[in-house]
Length: 239
Image 1: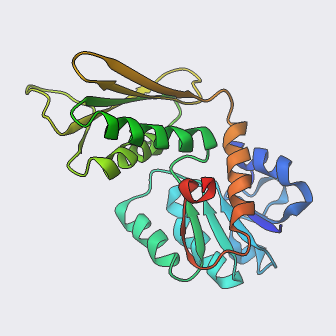
Image 2: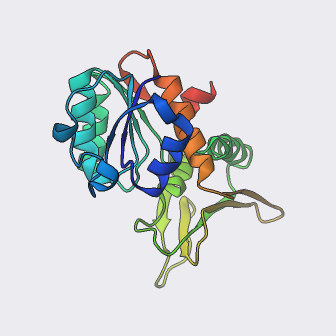
């Protein structure tokens, strides 16, 4: 596999770069440190199978434009995209293969499956999602929490997200509360609480290291080599 890595000098970029080694044929980082080009224009066209992005969600248009220019697949590892940026991702998938996930962990992908199964098994249960991350995380709720909510919504189409419940008013039947905690150096904890009134079930995933996200991103990149144009996610990769 030949990969271009965007956000190469960031924490995730360094982890992915260490895994792929000589399979990285191009790097881009806005800080320009370590003699890494700041822009795709500075990098120029390279022969690559996939462009891996772990920079910032605001760069997604440039990342996808470059992937289209060199005829490569794209793996988008950033989160916090606006509605407009998500539309850009969807549109790009009509021209090139695009892998997009709120979390690159295989464990989270399994958690999504379990969440759907549990929500379907207990159709009237109250469901709440709680996520915790380090104090440097800028988006809340996390992309993973929203990913879990959307997974549950597949079997509960009437579900409505209530992010950061506050004020007066009883909990409504169809709402799913999503709560964000920010503390210390927590890598990532996601819990789904399901309560029927007579019993409760808690599904939990805890990240021990950001390295698991790098591993997942590399697996996603390898999965995308040779794929036809379209939108792909962790569910597709799990099969």
